Structures are given as structure tokens and as C-alpha cells.
Image (cartoon, rainbow, N blue to C red; front, top):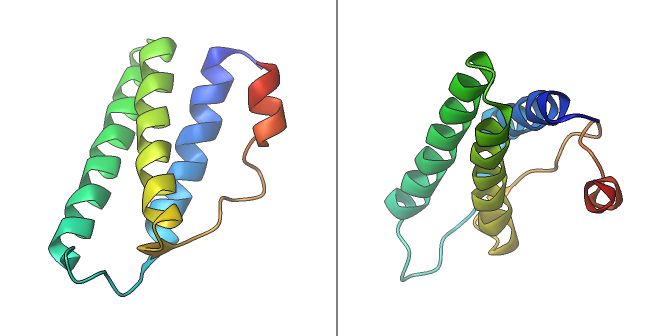
Length: 98
């Protein structure tokens, strides 16, 4: 899979997750506003990825969408949001092979 295809696939799955995720109860030292702020950072990285995809700067687009995914994964691993990556996402094994 080339960089252009990876960017398109990651943008699609990140967009789906951002549209469907649900926030959980937050720890006392982390406000709901803090979680929303991090989600907005993820949305901004996704917008950047789409912009660079449109400009055919796929390496920068891939980096941007990877940041988006990283923030989403961190929120999920901390138990602050609930979502599952769409089944069309590239598996971790496929990612490692690239």
C-alpha cells in the first residue's frame, strides 16, 4: 500500500472514530473540558491530514493523521473515551510490515 492509500485509509477511520466516540467519566484531576480539548487537537490533526492529502503531500498527511490516531488511542487507553477502530483499518501487523 502506498503513502497516498495509507493517508486515505487512516483519514477515513479517524474520521469515523471522531464521529462515534463516547466520553467516559473523567478522573477528578481531569475535567471534561480537558478531554474535549484533546479531542479538538485530534480533529485539528485530521483537518491537517486532509489538507495535505488534497495538496498531494502524502508524507505530511500521513504524519498528521498518525498524530490524530495517537491522541485517540491515548484517550481510549486512559479510559476517557470509548470507541473501536473500524474493521477496515489496517491491522497493527500490516502497519509493522510497511
